[in-house]
Image: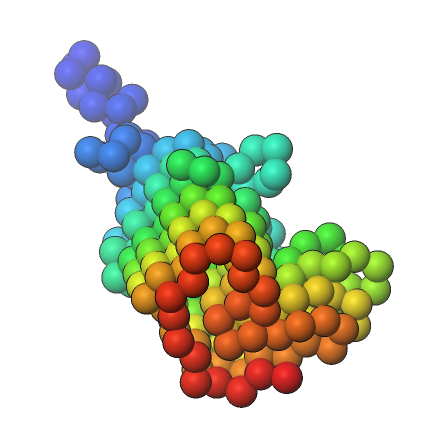
Length: 232
């Protein structure tokens, strides 16, 4: 155990991840559900997912992780990058994967498969992020996203609940719903204040209280996409 080995050990994070230093050149490596859960403690770092990750049992009732809690908050947003490596996260149950992707945050090359994302009075519901101010690209969702609120108006979307950044080359085939007094519901984003390019939706979209749309229920800015799903 010489000095050079000690330097390497300190640089490579093999406790919280499968290696890497969290830089763009050497991102933290995500191989397990525990590595994924640790992303929340390194919100400005860079990550790459090395393989598919199944959360079906871990985020079920009495699962080892419990219902998934979203990564990042409005006061401590995710500003790093997460590259899914063309792999999938399967069976996530609970809140959206990310809560708040900041202006410099990037999520790309990731599939969310067979998830059951839900929210109550404290959040939106979406496959990738509740709120996106950054960039989401080359991602897709096949699971369900449902926002249920008695008091607050939160959005639901296949990719993002509300988009203030850029969503590109993404698609959704899951069911999206805003129930009770929840707000907008969209196949890609419930509401869009940013840019949505080259995206499509084939999932069913429902809003009980307000508007719904195949791509976005409301869009105040640039939107280039197409929809084929049913929406009510």
